[in-house]
Image (tube, rainbow over all chains, first blue to last red; front, top):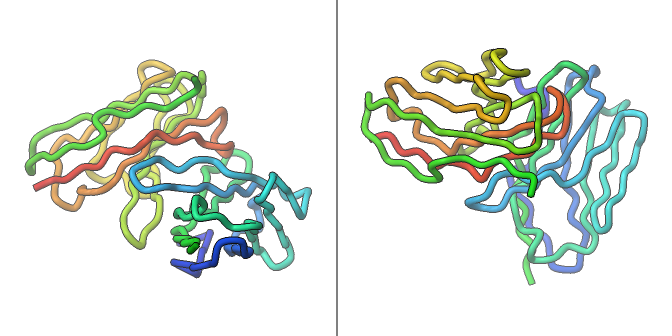
Length: 111
Length: 112
């Protein structure tokens, strides 16, 4: 049963614009959320996280927003750069529970 | 440098020939796990280990074995590989089960 869902398999954005990647979850016990970025031929790398006590976390060009009532998570990349082209995985967990990953969204940033 | 290493990075084998993919981390993490990534299916957990000598099944454990004799190493064993185990495999480690995981570079396996 897929508890973390990324409903958009792919997204294309022009360089300089905002990229918004979305993630929905079903388990209300999740209290820790992460985004990973994956380039071809490399392992996923941790990008940014947020705990359920916050609704926003920022790190440079990357901001994650959490809407607990909607069980929705989003990653904003502003401004998008060609080097941001990668597959982005959303993940969620709670204490004593393994990370649960979405299926990923492939982002293409075009010049 | 903090890292998770996997070997080999690429492997072509034939059905039934036992193989082992090694995984090692230098961050003194207690939790380690193996994932496979397949098109359209994302990352699925195969096995995980909470600590030395403590391992348990993930979502897709059939056809795999693991061991955790030392804290830093967590090998993945395919006793009798089959073509449906052709996949991209990732090892990961974290300080705790639900914590931020750090991934290895991946092992691409082709079973003929």
